[in-house]
Length: 362
Image (tube, rainbow, N blue to C red):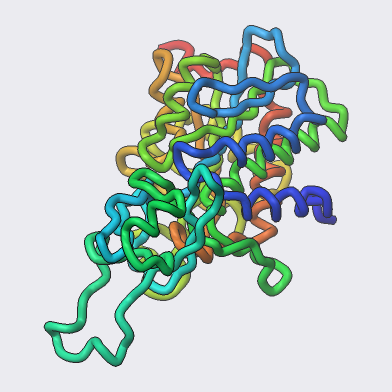
């Protein structure tokens, strides 16, 4: 039986369709907080927009479960005299995907629609007329005749731009859309809170559900909130690559496949004792698990929590994802449910003042 309810899926639909670009996450955070409010005791917001719910407040031992709220996007960088807009990245946007995509330009006057234009195939004959797609030559057309008309629409340098692509369900098993990286993480921890409430579980510690901002430009939200909360333990959930689609090398990327369960990462930032607890929980509860390795940093908010406050035992549980940083990111529903279940069951095994010391004696 699915642990994701129709109400949960309706929230996910709304949450994924909402724009939440890095640095401009407020509307998405409002949606997320409104959804989790019945399942938490209180919520807070930091100065840069990281939102967090608190369950069972007042304990000295503090556990964080975390995802990040922001999505990749573009900034208006330059407006030509002819009325075309050049852009720069806000996060790791893939410029290869841009030509022919429809976009929303966010202004104080509301949304202005536009498109990433590109020369027609008929005009691209010969090497000198066949441009490669680069961040320097992609451009947005809003149907304006000149720069003045663009500016009269409320568009200026610094306006943020998101794609129009919206959520869909494919073949009754894949969630598809933009920004599954990593609003799926926010959804998973929200569902953990719902399960704890509905199953009337009382934790022996304070649990923080953290939806961090600004991960896509360097884990900045997690860095700030780790210092604010000063947790004893952090379990981070993010996405990882399904390496079994065309044009990807399993040997280079790692052997992870959508539909085969969440992936755990072995890395210097990942605490061995906490990881062992997660693995044993998966084995006991028969939750499928995959494994991968990060040779230095994990590239996720795990690093920010692990290396904060003198060292916080941290671990990473990843959701296999196809086509990361495109507008058609895909995640298998069974994997999403397994991530939720694994975090939930692990939390039930953490005790107040749980011993995560690297070793006890020599």
